[in-house]
Amino acid sequence: MFDDYGAVYIAIGERAQEEAGKSVASLRRFNDISVSVLYVIGILPKSPIVLSNGSQWSRWAKVNLNNLIEPWTYAVYIDADTRIRGSLMNGFNLLKDGWDMIITPSVSQGDDLMWHIDQEERNCTVEEIGYLESLQLQGGLFFFRKCARVDKLFECWREEWLRYQDQDQAALLRALHRAPVKMWLLGRPWNGGALVEHRFGALR
Amino acid sequence: MWIQLRALKHIEVQGKLRTYHAGDWVNVGKQAARMWISQGEAHIPQGQTTRILDENCGVYIWGNYALGEKALGDYAGGLEMMSGEIPEVHWNKTLIYNPRQRLRKELMPIGFHLLDIWEMAIPLWDYKELACHVGTQEEREDTKSVIRDLRVPLYSPDLVFAHECPNAKKVVQQWQGGSGDTRLSLLRAIYTVKPLILALPTTWLWKDMGSLNVR
Image 1 (cartoon, rainbow over the protein chains, first blue to last red):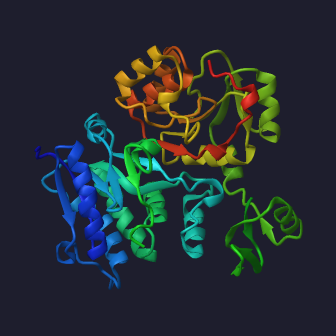
Image 2 (cartoon, each protein chain N blue to C red):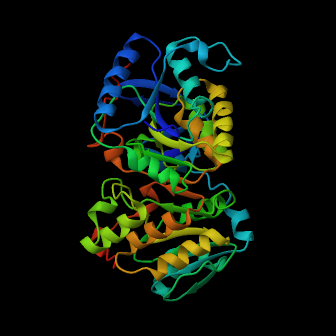
Image 3 (cartoon, rainbow over the protein chains, first blue to last red):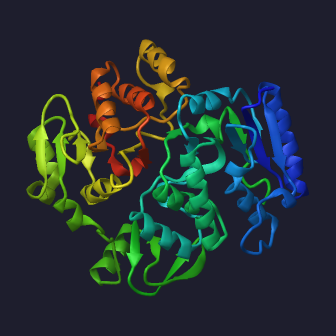
């Protein structure tokens, strides 16, 4: 085990915890790293608004991840509804090479742009980032490092998510527009492919 | 086709009628889009067009100058242009454009505007064709020795927005100094320099597979 990097899951609710357990087991088959599973609401930073369900708590946890990974410098966030089929170490190596965040584009591009985002938030996002055709990012698995730029991004992500308190992807786009980071993209095998199977919707 | 409504509309989505209001972005068929636009009930906002053309922006046409000038259409009159064999970041905001690729002119001002925030903005080449799928074995090995993992998307070498800053200049220099598949060369350069780069969706490109020749 190493103490400067690890994997973090968010698993609020029985079903999420069950899925996370299976994902962690699959991760450990191929990776010798520390794992943290956030399943207790009490350890999360206090929210300035009342969060009404597990889904909101999960997203609040996600936008606070930069403050929840101590003592690690490098972390990978992994959705509970995944199964890891190989080594993720290259993701950490990419961070150590100097990238701030490593993430995969979403499968929902083009005509499926922000399909799952509320119309009002979609309009706002387009208005504020200044254009419609932006690259959608899949926030179900991403690597990030602890640094000033990433801390600023997460700060903006929290502020943006609190505006609508729903999905986190459009909030991430608005946050990146305010606080850009050095971002390297991964291909589909890393999220929804051969390396990381993603059982989208398993927790809904 | 994405359009922004200027009037209330009821649109069928997955078998259900939904109400959209003025200001909402909706994705409808081209025929409906054109009709509503012609009736003033929708539009495709151009945003920052005029402001962008007032700044020190230019287009480096990497290829046939006449083709590039034609592709730029009305913008050709308002933007500085140059061409040559080896692209460079010549202006405060530079678009390196290869006219073998059709240009979506309406996105050009947006690309320049993005350079207010990012050092570079480049569309992805494809979502499925990754670095592990292109180039010779030797080129892939060379690339892997730099970027560690080839299961990553490529950037398009045909549409590169670059801000005049040390990182963007280094990327372009290293990219042009590389050999082999130009997409892999660009990827290695980006990885080595690590600029603040915004990846854009592949829809920023018109892809005519029949005319592609990336070497």
